[in-house]
Length: 199
View 1 (tube, helix red, strand yellow):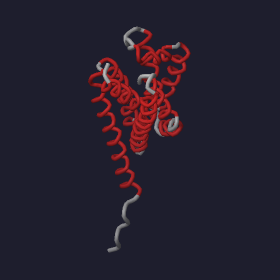
View 2 (tube, rainbow, N blue to C red):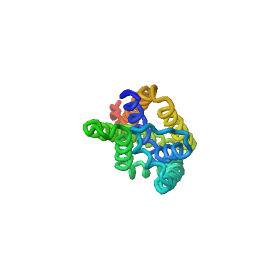
View 3 (cartoon, rainbow, N blue to C red):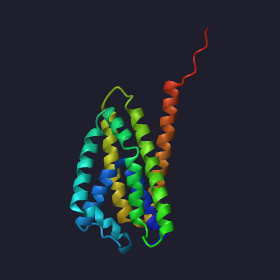
View 4 (cartoon, helix red, strand yellow):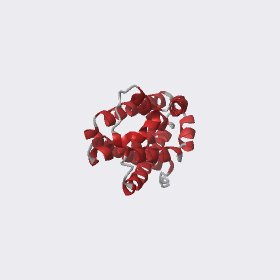
């Protein structure tokens, strides 16, 4: 596996963990345990994810996140709580993916993985805060369900087709930037309108 594929996988997993950290950990561990995801030798450190204790805790976290993320404003509280947890988790996942014999690459992966996860988390949290301003609860439920399906699907693509994982990471990066920009524009329009001039 070449450096582009490794960077692509690390970037994809880090960005996806900014959306659904526990689901990323559980899905990866489950795929490894079922031998659906053969782990190359240089990714052997990811084997810890198929540990029953790690999978159990990740499953509990994924279930809690699944339900919390469907409830208006509870999802924002959940995102706030995970502002530090997701970037650290994304950084550690990226660190586990790169070659352990190269300390410089590991430091770069840790920093970029944490940054990518934080960016994705910021985009998700900002977009969901805007969705919560909608008076009906359906948009929140639909948005959360789309995030669940997209996370599992993109995680599968990143591991199954490492040659296009870099493209997946680039798309996720652009989506996160777009969500942040969209949330910024909407918040600015809602809360910082110019006062109307008197007639």
